[in-house]
Length: 171
Image 1 (cartoon, rainbow, N blue to C red):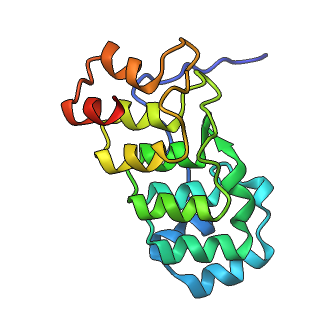
Image 2 (cartoon, one colour):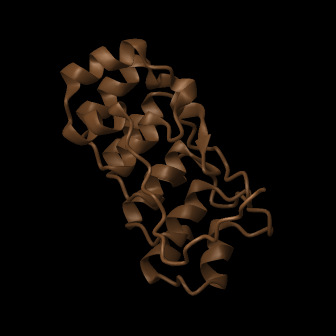
């Protein structure tokens, strides 16, 4: 006889345990991290190591360390439908970190796979400081369109994001 158990409505979702790599990133422990990365199988990661480090606001020295020790391929990957730069912008990393990622192979012209928006669109949407927009404008034409045919300027005008400084810059 098969018995069916009712699920309790009061159960809290179980927290996923952090991997050893994630724990070492949290601790900023480069020595142990270097040893672990030598044998780490990146294919088994549920959350790419470099993305995790950006989420945690890890210092650039740790990001450099990760890139030099097996994570270089992750600058070209997407996770949760975001490329590494979109992920970095969403987590509001410093502009110097963005520059660092680009200098290590991240593509500033990569578009969002869901709506074809550029990083300029993302800067506007996230209301990032004008310095971010100025920086990406050197890589991406302000006339680049998202899937709705909106340039970053049109997008700014048609949204509730209106920012006078941003508008004057984009015009």
